[in-house]
Image (cartoon, rainbow, N blue to C red; front, side):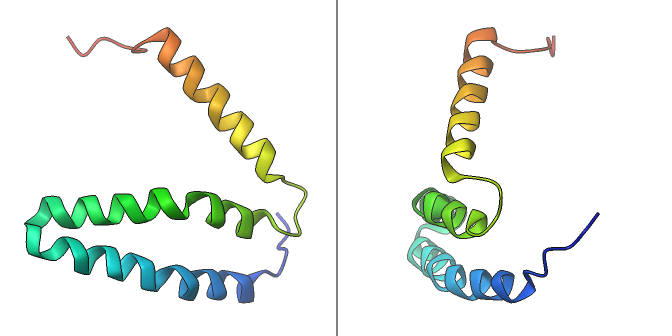
Length: 87
């Protein structure tokens, strides 16, 4: 494997998304564990597209390709139902 040398970008990414995640935790804190989980989930849902766009910038991967692939995967998993029986 070869490295792209994107350590600096990873640090920027971590610093950029740390504040919204901490704010999500803080907003959910008065509501207990469920509130914290909900706050984190909402922040992750809101940050998914900007995070993906930031991560693929300057690489051979496109954000459109990720969205199309994720959409196809979801459609396949919903149409086939469970892959195994826990029964």
